[in-house]
Length: 138
Length: 140
Image (tube, rainbow over the protein chains, first blue to last red):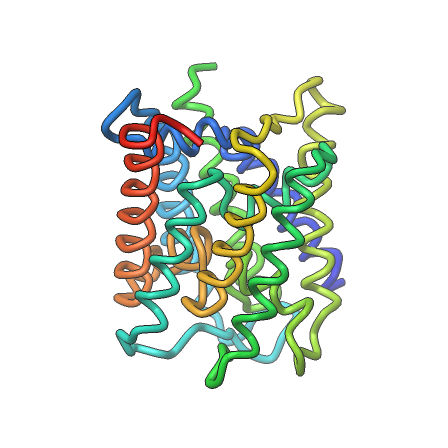
């Protein structure tokens, strides 16, 4: 049941990314190109997603626990540290080079473009490297 | 449909997916956190993570079946740049504990100060990178 609902959530997420144009790196790079031909679509996607999530979380988090788990697992760290800022900066550079963040990269795998496969394998390698650093996530 | 309306609709679906995952499993829909858990040592709950990623990968195929367009666009840069980008995106979201979905959507929806800062930083660096690539170097 857990897997089924996770699958459904992943499907919804991917359909949303695709309809919003986020699986087209040209659209994402167009959003980041604020000094050129700016494409605002990513902003509309984020606005729709943030507002829906904010309202939905408000309703859901009133409950005592999730349907299928013992508790809600929300990030608790409040620290502004070098890992957070440095990590976001490195991610931003990679995002700006190819126009893929992790969701659209995975959602585009089905098209079986060889260079995208390479990007995803390198992304997995990056996650693995990051998890080897001392004081890793979780 | 106008592409901006479609973008809002896409965003609402992404939000619905995030709310569903929180309501059912109590987890934040951060793609880098979910997917990197598949390869991190010591993670015990790989089942739902794999199911979520499978759903994500199948989604464009579903769209293709429904209306003949998967929505997947072509990569814009060559193979070496794709490799470098993948490494930076993986490493950066790994040490920064999140990406566009975890920080940019779920974190901002919770008004998390860490996520607001992270989102501002990766947006700025993304914009600066595209500026350098397109307007200073003339493309990759």
